[in-house]
Amino acid sequence: MEGTDRSSVDGESNETTFSALFKACESDPKGAVHKAWALALLLKIVLFVSACLVVLNLETNGGSSKALVFAAMWTALVQLAMAITGSFILRRFPSSFTIGFFLGLLVVVAQQNLILYATFNDYNFGQQRSNRVFAFFALALAIVYIGFALILANFREHILMSPGDLDNVAGFRRFCVGDQSVTNANHQKFDAAGFDDSNNGNDTRL
Image (cartoon, rainbow, N blue to C red; front, top):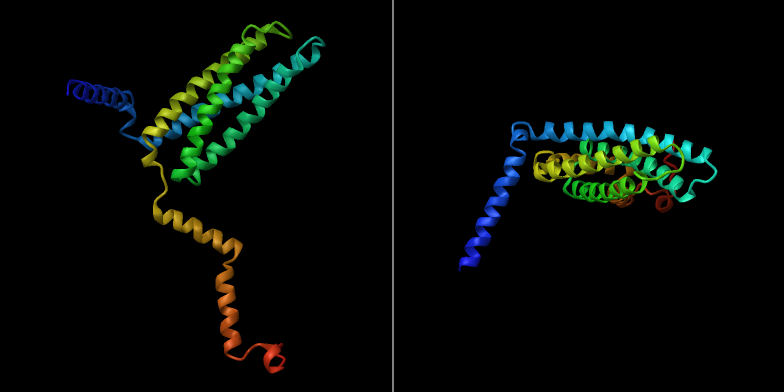
């Protein structure tokens, strides 16, 4: 009985701590999510530029590791893909599935940035200063990713699309692709009315 009470108290205290952590964002939760993502985008740009500089410096150094050159190039591509994917999900299609998918991506890329920090912080080839700058921004972006993931998970209900919006998206998709079932039904109606050229042999062309 005491164990149950203690676990319930711990759960309530954790919930209170989590709510107090984002209390400043409760007045405008949707705006807080977009502002946090804007900060992440800014760091993405800086990390992308620093990754390109690291690749250039490592390529000019003949004794550099090809694996780390690839790691820096891959980092630049991943940050670009994250910027496009995240902006599309948050602004165009924030459904329950896409938000969950995006949260998973944030956790994975944050872990990758932590590994990049540990790898490039003490790397001696190329220009050590550029390597450390790249490692610093990788760490900073990892922290921002984690914080943004917490904000997004806490306020995800405020940015999800309404069922009406989801129906509009589905209707637009059917309009673009074409509803084959409706087309087949129309053909069946014309055939039943005797407008099929193959059945009556008449030429209906004007």
